Amino acid sequence: MEKNVPIEITADPMDDEDFDVSVEALDRAQRSRLIRRTRTALGLSQTEFASRFRVPVGTLRDWEQARATPPDFAIAYVRVIREHPDLVAKVVA
Image (tube, rainbow, N blue to C red; front, side):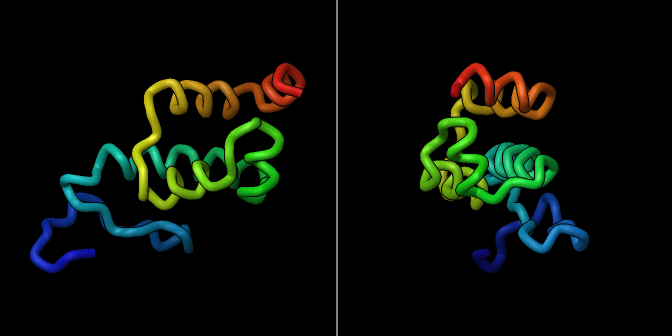
């Protein structure tokens, strides 16, 4: 993280993959956390999640690491996955 950038949210000490978030990156980071926490709650690796739900693994990595901002439709998709993972997997199979 750049020096002298105000931190809005500090890293979650219970999440080894979490990171500090600046004010400018807050939206991107919240989306990143939603995706990563959904995947880990399902007990899936990035490769497994990407394959199961038809998301390019490189895109998933970029989203989870906040290198790219997931679009609104992707966030909606992840929210549906979080609530109905088996149904979504069946539909996209």
